[in-house]
View (cartoon, rainbow, N blue to C red):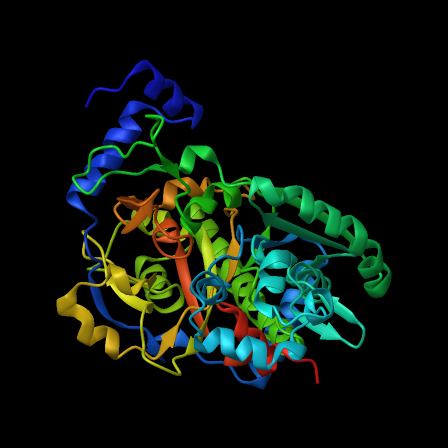
Length: 469
């Protein structure tokens, strides 16, 4: 495919080259293969269940670890919250009442942003959209405490102080859209002194933007490059999976990952189970490091190593391997993922997945990655992944892994969108917690639904988790 000089300059401005673009177009043409799911991960077969004694034990392990290691809380923050307000925008543009708009008007005084958007007129929906319709979720008031309304950013500051401190310092990293960065900084400059005084700690807060090199080209329905009215190519952000690059830039011993909108008024369960997950990660990581050193020194046998990999880190092997092959499996980034019981129709979640070599491992799989003929297996799933991850990004010698080397490039998502009234096809890179971490070692732990309270539509803020008692 030939590109003009102008195209080549535009491609270069995204830190890409024509080989990258040709591969993306090839992905559009061929699509991505379905994941070979073997069975769902369930209680006792892939999902670890913990009792109160386990929580106490692993909390103590994590608390001791945090005193001497660097902990970072990584928060993917969205761009404008247009999806959260989609139904309100629909009502404002058409005048057709929908259930979300109706409930928003009926319970308007229960929202934390009530005082900021109320007025003498009755145009509640437009007041909300004019104030917050183009803001990111992180900056929208979610919770009302007496006379103080708190944003998700502030709730993450609270969580950071309670479970993600290194000594007397809490490191937080937000990924933000460039157009909202100044607003994030303004909020943080205003509120951080209060939270530092409240919790007796110091915050070290950093931000990054999704890298342009992770953008993907958009194509027409015939898979030729989509062009804007001025003839330029259209590039789009490649979804949350692109954030593996941002995660890779963080220097830490342990990283918590939690979405910006997954906060609640009472974070006590969140704190309890975050420390549980982190303690499990620290404990298993210590065993892995010890086993690798024994392999290096010739102080262990194949059966011991084989059994550990099979029983401890969610990998089922197709026969015995060499010590070098076992070491390669052990010496990878490690993650512990909290999973929540399905309460409705099961979709994507944790599954045992077979790769091309026959190795079966624990993976987080999106429903769109599952072949139609495997949907019956999906229906048997007990859990879903609420994006509740603890990551160990360093090896047994204390060196950072290059996380980009553990991505499954054969995973991704293609969807149909539109631009200026014209249909197009868009592509997202492997998701952060599935394809982008496909070659990590994974441990799944059951956590209660009380730790999962995302806000996908504005009326989710009326649920108990977001209403201060």
